[in-house]
Length: 115
Length: 115
Image 1 (cartoon, rainbow over the protein chains, first blue to last red):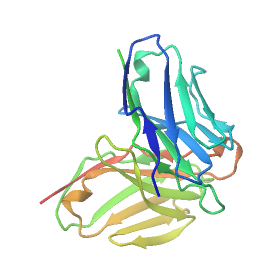
Image 2: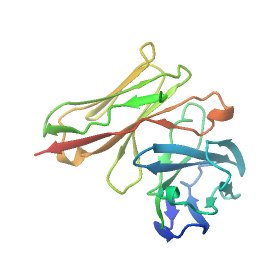
Image 3: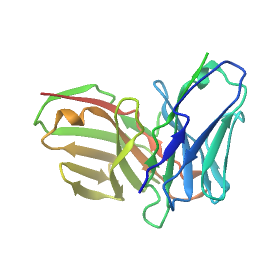
Image 4: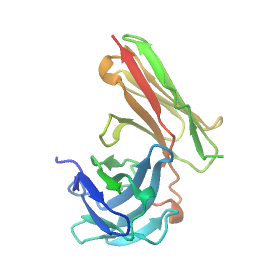
């Protein structure tokens, strides 16, 4: 079974631009969570989507948004980029069936650099 | 105070040693406890998944959860140079609402196993 894929793997943008990142979950997985990873803050939760609905959102400004499509693929968007948005953005998919809710599988991430 | 505390190390051990990695947490609502391994410039890889208290063994890896002490551990037996990576503990509160899909991570422990 193919794993979680993320595109693109690397991005370089300038301040003020916007960016869209894509995530394809493992086949059959319906939940997609997004995380931001930085050396200083570690892994921080951005939001979670299940069946095209955002069920949960972390403490990030409104410039961070996302969506999920009917095939469970997900995108996240960051508008008006700031230098501090430079990070590794990870998505993780899960089924989630009863008893396995915490079992999330991560993609390789998209490394975003904001200049 | 962070919800999940993990000693960042770094931890350096000789090949063949037993490695002990630990996390403490403050949120008694956490029910699912995971350990991830992350190699440099890669996404986290799920190693161990435990629900509630107890032990779980998988090959050279043993995960322990003590909910009464709010303490979890990962033991690696016969450590190998290929085990050199960052190890992240993660937890999930499955109460729904603001918990959906949200893993809370420790800062990660950098482990080096030298030949």
